[in-house]
Every structure is written in structure tokens, then in C-alpha cells.
Amino acid sequence: MLGDLLGRSGREAALRAIPELRVTLRLDFVSVNAENASHGFGLGPDMAEALFAAGADVITLGNHAWDRREIIPYLAQEKRLLRPINFPPGTPGAGSAIITINDGRRVLVAQAMGRLFMDPLDCPFRGTAVELSRYKLGHSVAAIVVDFHAEATSEKMAFAHSFDGQVSLVVGTHTHCPTADHQILPGGTAYQSDAGMCGDYDSVIGMSTEGAAARFWRKTPGERLAPADGEASVCGLYVETDDATGLAVRVEPVRQGGRLSPLLPLV
Ligand SMILES: [Fe+2]
Ligand SMILES: [Fe+2]
Image (cartoon, rainbow, N blue to C red; front, side, top):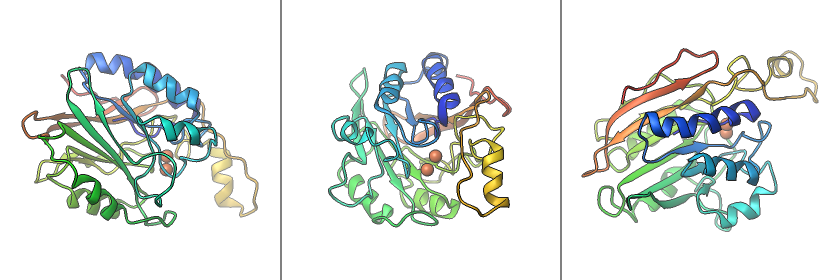
């Protein structure tokens, strides 16, 4: 799972890293959050196509899902592209998908969005519980990946513990900083509060420092935000699951390139 791709720098680093990591880490399944891929705001259909071609099996979005309007009809017909499940009924697209990988195993992927310090939405806990009640990990699906897109670590942890033992992975996205709390929870669900972004870390959560800092110094409107365009660090999470149960047996951070110290699991 790779965290939020940020602008051209993050997008291009991820496009290079996905095919390479698929081989070196012997990955069966790759999910990517791309809500910030288009100049920091949203995702273009052409960019989604490029990520699928590079080896992403599924792409998740978040609060920036609708920033590029052309994505709306694309979302409605591309089942591998997900927006949060807890948007109101009738919202285009879907919040979950079953993806069948090459060897026939089925993976359920879902995304929900938090409500603390975020726009009001339907309940992400109940929405996810309803979706999960339709599947049984290790039986009808080999793995379940849940991207919980949220601001507050408390909400992320509460969410992960609520579904511990029911899913393979709960991974946080949205804050753009990798947390050091990756672990397997007592019930067997892998967890990390935030995967971090794929982007230039000489920035304010991926946006160039000058414009972003000016927003705090001066409260006048109109300070322009643009993605930082230095070398990106690719950040994400590697998870190994037990085929019999679908639960996690190993979870390791992945960090490659750019300013952050590198971390890659030995596989
Ligand atoms: Fe983001
Ligand atoms: Fe976000």
C-alpha cells in the first residue's frame, strides 16, 4: 500500500517504484492512494490509467476525490478506483471493490473517511461494518485492505481496533507523514496510523513551503499552494498475510528515495 501520491514528483516516483517493488518485494497486490496526484488536488483519468498500467491493482481517493471533475464519470465506470464508502447514497463511484488477482484469489478493498476535523459524512464505522458483514476473511476473500482516510490518530486507532481480526490491514492515509506505529494488532490485523505520502518531504505536507507557511503567517486569502517538486520519497506499507486466515503475519514500512531515511523489508 502506497500513501497519498503528491503531484508530479510523487506520481512519477510511484510510477517508477510500483513495477520495481512488485518484483523485489514479490508483491501479489498493490494499492495506492492517489487523491493528491494531480498537482496536489484530485486525480485525472489519464493518471489513473498510468498507475494501473504500472501495476497498481486498486486506487483509493479521499477528501480530494472530486477536485478533478473529469474523474466523476470515470469513477462511475472504473471499479478499481474507490472513493470513501461513507459518502451519502447516490454519490458516484463505490467505496469498495473485489479485485481478483492473477492466481484467482479475491481481495476486498474498502476506503472510509474519518469525521474528526473533516467534512461531515455518514458514519465510517457503521458503513464499513455493513460492508464487511458481507464477506468472511479467509473464506470468501483471501485478504481485506481498508484505507481509513482521516486526520485524527485517535479516530484511526479506534477504527482499526474496531475491525481487528476482521480485515488484513487498516492503513491510515491523509496526513502525509509516515507514522512509526506499524504493528499487528492482537486480533491479527496489520495497522499503521498513516502510510505517509509519496512526495517531496522538503515541503509542508507536500506543498511548497513558501505558500504553505504564508497561510499561517498571514490570514489574507489567495496565498498560492503548489506541490513541492523535489525528489519524492515513496512511502508505504508492506504486509504479508496468512493464506489460511487472511490475517497479517508481517508488517513493515517501505520508504525509498528523497529526503527520508530508506527502509525496505528483506523478502
Ligand atoms: Fe492526501
Ligand atoms: Fe486527504
